[in-house]
Each structure stands twice: as structure tokens, then as C-alpha cells.
Image (cartoon, one colour):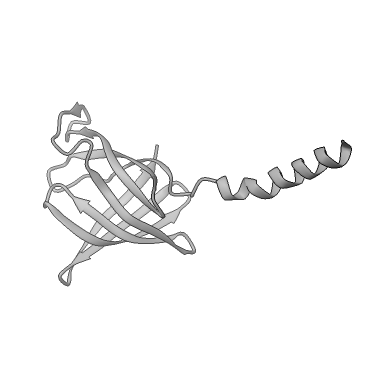
Length: 129
């Protein structure tokens, strides 16, 4: 019986890292867009990648506002590259464009940038909520 319990504890201990959350997972407050608005993004696994959905939108005055973009995927196809870097896609509602993205995680800050057809944009730094 002791051996069975010990084996079960070892198995659980070895399996735990497989269930560890990715450091990018969680809620992120975006930087302000061209209109001064910003949002709250929920990042979670989606298949083998990570995706981020806009769960709330805020106006330039900081007050929550209605937006047709709430519920839309802002981050998609995003995978870790190592060293806190992620690559994937990021949608910019203010420009209605999807960019090939580079995300650089540094603690509770996320530097966001992306390019589409050779035109690149600095998406600013998002902060963990």
C-alpha cells in the first residue's frame, strides 16, 4: 500500500509541470489606440497556441464603454519562442488590420509590435491586471 501511494505521489509530481499556465496567460490592459481608447484582453490557450479576447473596452476618459469589438479575438496563433518572446497575430480594432506580431514579456509588462505588408506598428506596452 505504501508503495502504491508513493508511486501515485511521484506520478502526480511529475505531471504537474504539464498543467502549469503559460506566463502570458491572464488579463492585460492594452496601451491606448489612435482614438485614446484601450481594452482589457483575456489571454488563454486555444489549441496548441495562445489567444487573447477583448473582454472590456474603455474610452479616452477611462470609463468602460460599449464596443462592437468586445468578444473579438485580438491575439491569435501566438506561440512562445523562448526568452519571453511570442510570435503570432494581433488585430488592431482602431485600424481594422491584423498584424504578424511580436510580443515580448518582461514581468508584468508586454511590449507589443506587429507588421503587415512591410508596414510595422509599435503597439505599445500592455500591463498585467
